Length: 368
Image (tube, rainbow, N blue to C red; front, side, top):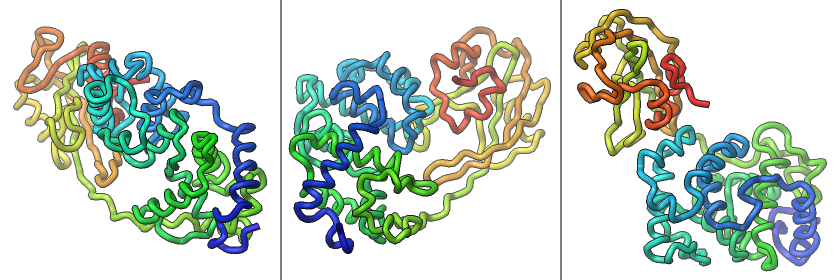
């Protein structure tokens, strides 16, 4: 049994007994996930990018939809951007899927469409860092490299009562180096997934960990001392910047108006409902509507809501504005930078980010 944190992950005891106990637990308790059915590097890669800051259960329908439409690297490489963004709709962080396409294109051009079975080569692909490269390399190609995500960092911090900030790159690098030393050559993918599942299912981030079923409990200092609430340590993030915005829904009974955001910046290249900085009054909202060349007939305030990005928090005011039907002559018509579309067309064609989803239900654009 480890006596202090300096003993953790060292010596033959861990490499033997604990290694076997962890893998035995994983074999009996591992999560059944669609991307685990085959050791397909493309499927593993797609799932890992989707799982960044998103729960497993929430990811499953997005993953299944994405794989139906883009089942391989070749399909992803040539997918039109608007379709790609629509497939990613609801997952957020759209630059991730843009980087995925860049990586797919590089795989097609440099590696003849075949995922490189090399850790460093994987890290050389756009949008792939140490963790994703480690997951693909170890699971798909049985390369003994670690895959250190938040679950693994939490497990390691509690095992050793390690109070260092897990958000620091130096801490992640150290954990990667330590795990590399004891990575089992025969099945590194199972080891990495066992550590991930242990963090997700037992050594929980919120609420009490399930120490009674943990295969590493006898060696866990936080479990022994009941100090798990203190680990892992994360330095407090800077407060988010608060921004007020006003969203306008232009509705004529058959159509609603959307517009494309700029190619750079927040939510780049996606579609949105017309919106403005600050909190507009009803009169100001009507004046803005007239600038688009539409004829407002009625205005109704919508319930306010908040949307949180990583560094910005939007406080959103909204109005539904009924406009004259003859303002829109045909489906897909563009007028003053706005595209007017019916609910079905808009829902199928235009990627509207979750920042505006709260108001989508007032236009029949609400997504499943």
